[in-house]
Length: 499
Image 1 (cartoon, helix red, strand yellow):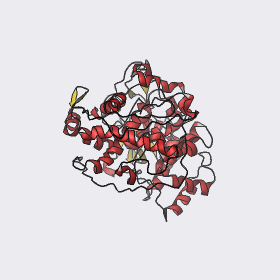
Image 2 (cartoon, one colour):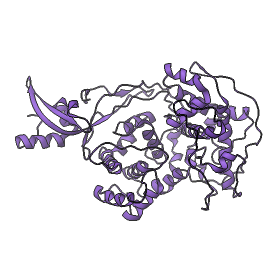
Image 3 (cartoon, one colour):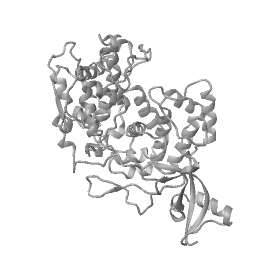
Image 4 (cartoon, one colour):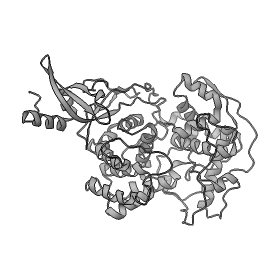
């Protein structure tokens, strides 16, 4: 176990701003455990462009920034993607000095994006089913081209973010709670049984009681992706997730997020908590981006999930796998390349892409990652001979039939998207280092070495073989309650720094 990270430890992330952004090295007491930052292996350094404003992006994107207030305007006439596309092929592309050879799935990606968006356009225009001639899309479930248009995202905006107190702490509590399960029915059940969902009135026991009853007959979690929880006090994942929720709230997640100057800093902080994997942390960050708690450009940063990694292999075959062996950030670079050249590829294939909203905004990084994952699934049927050797999945398990529920003529967009800060793009090209936090379960014993008191710390979720000796002064700065409890038991009084 590596040593404790202390306040004197240099814990900065390199960025292009004049002021370095420094992660707080100590945190408040967490419930039920306290956290200390322990230095993880650095995956990569961060590299960013100085003063990388939206005006430095391709002209089309600079003019179509999402941080305008046009979202509440009526929709314009819809544009359908042509049924017959151009046969021009893209032989190679070069990204970060790597020559990549696209497969047929690369062109399928652009056709899928245009057609999936057209399906959404036709539904909103009130046209009858079917909204496509694509046999796969008629019967199989696929998310929207734009993440914000998905049913779950629309629910988050309307029911989770914009309803209830707009205090940053309350917004973060609601978004984090929803993102634990990412299931609309679970949220609705909580609302039904609790009346209101607020951090101010939060009772862990009450939430466990309500969810325990629900879990007897229903699945609490989304089936779209796995959501492992920390291995803490309970066998049930949802109970440990509630402990994690209380922990991050007690560590003032809202306050921390509002101080970060860069999106990747916010991501690294979220990902530092136990069980918050790379993709889970990124998805939570995107959900929070629908609120005013954080205001970053959607073209700052992206983390490719498992589905997107697989989709990129199907698009570029061994060429991207070989590039990844020497450049671990090539996938991020390719997603950014696709975002910045999307208009070029739609034109190359003769596709008319309607874009987002009246101003027909292009896809941002999160939309690209989102769509690549969907095309990974689509390719299982459209191109069964092209597989990701690591996964090799060939089936689409989720069938789709049109719902009888009314489909809104216009989607809802976050009010927070009007914030001027979202006009500024500060690009991050690499996966940031994450300083993982470890939970202190208890102090086993203490000793004095050359006049200095050290505590033998047992870390939650680890065996006694991982116990470490830590200076009591450092331990007290991060976990005063645990130190005081030990001192009261053994010395009959609280610990004092002057002790």
